[in-house]
Image (tube, rainbow, N blue to C red):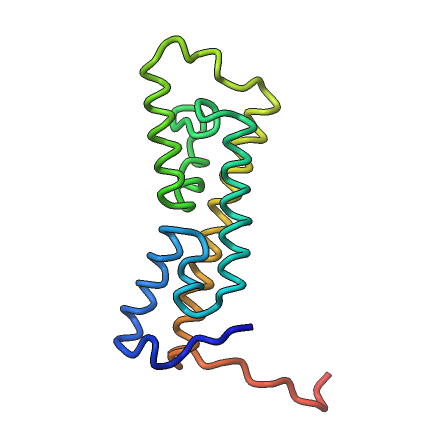
Length: 153
């Protein structure tokens, strides 16, 4: 497992933590990539991106990323970052065309699609929090856990 280098990010820890969070929102895994956790970043990118776009593929953009129909799920989906904004933009463009009504998914597919995309967003929210915690831990803001005692138990 790659460890972040101390000389890589020597400025204010709070600014670095915010930057790691922004990077992680812009592209899933980018915050971890910036911190030096390359393999972890690649896994996060693949899992979140595939999960989000699989949801969109199952339900179509008209069903999956529809603020009027999906309420709070949209907030979860937006945690994926610009990918969700792109899907939302595609939805608005599709709504402008009345001949696109047939592109809405039927019942089970529509619910599954919304949940897939929402779960991808919630997972990315956890990844953002993890990137922030790793950044603070590397800076010494949050002390690392002490090793477990041998005799405890």
